[in-house]
Image 1 (tube, one colour):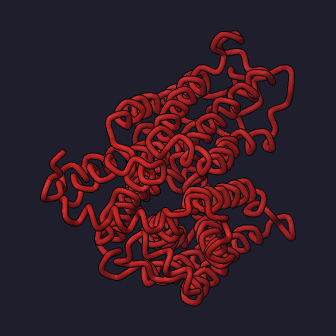
Image 2 (cartoon, helix red, strand yellow):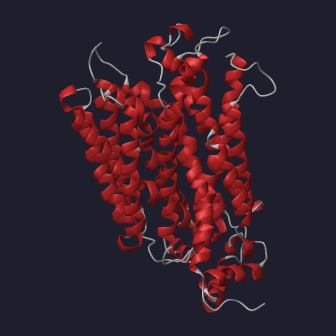
Image 3 (cartoon, helix red, strand yellow):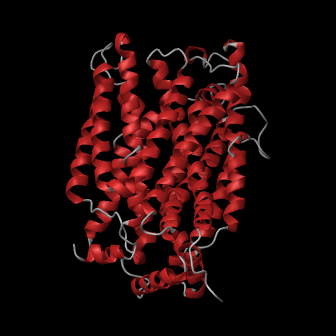
Length: 488
């Protein structure tokens, strides 16, 4: 079969855009809870057979993250045995089932609208199922894009996955905002007093609104599961299972025939041993990948993203959902900064400058939170903190995780790195509220400044880690990673 002499950018862009839909669903699924959590909390506080405590609510709000840990841990095995494409189809189906199940957890087994302990367990099961999809997509989408992209634009294309994650969060902020419409969220002091005690405009949110918010994810989830069926498998995976001709065909469509043959030769040279041990290239290779994931979460960004409406409400903002949407727009714009500079400036400079910006923002929040006269400085500091993450640790971590590991251990190494990411996401998300509400005396703000001060210190440590230990991978092929780590 004659191979195309010139690569097709349209073909490359089309398959990358389908893959980044997985990133959009990642962002959508993890952020949908921000608009739904108050209505959900009030709904389950109506239960007669158990007490829906703050502890239960914290667990329910974060239960999807348990699935994320499971999904990311399984991603290496699935990516290696099923392939990148089929694994993403599985992720899409899990997203779809979770969306419908979270909207109607009573399906088949329970009475509609009757909160019980058993219904809470079923709701969390559906959220964990969605989390498994997120875990798979978070590891395999960047891996897929990294394995089909030419080396000179790989960083930019993988960064689009982070753009899709943030765009998914922004979309769901808007969706939640429009679903809420003229209705309002229930007030904390009304919860637990019975549905009759809740403001009439908030009762719809408690009985119905949160369901629509979770169910809305079924639309992009179904689209993703359908479209991913039409993209090719990655050339690196095809070579690993002995399908060189198919790999050459895809490489030729993307890069042109002459370049494709050279890339295929390089891939085969690094695939001579298909089952190398994880530590073949040394512990430092795995350590760097893990710590990139750990720092991406330990800097505390998801404590802001998941609880944004509640944080802005505590600051005294009149309409916290509007401020949250504005923050989402800022996040989108600064993610674009990373996309269009990562191949020019490199990975390390963006990570270091982003760490410094985040530290400034976090310390700003620590020093001003709770002071009504400085609430706009606090809000600006949160925006600086968030924006700095979006042009650095947000996209660049995914770029590095997708490209930094040698071909023969990439599936397993990415799975381990991303599993650590979700473990620390869970730790940060579940510890934020208890830390934030700590007091040394009854009325002090110790928890406020301690929490953001801690995040600021971690940001400084992250900058030092990147400066000393993370190699620059700009312009290197995936096959160059084998040589890079063998030199260490």
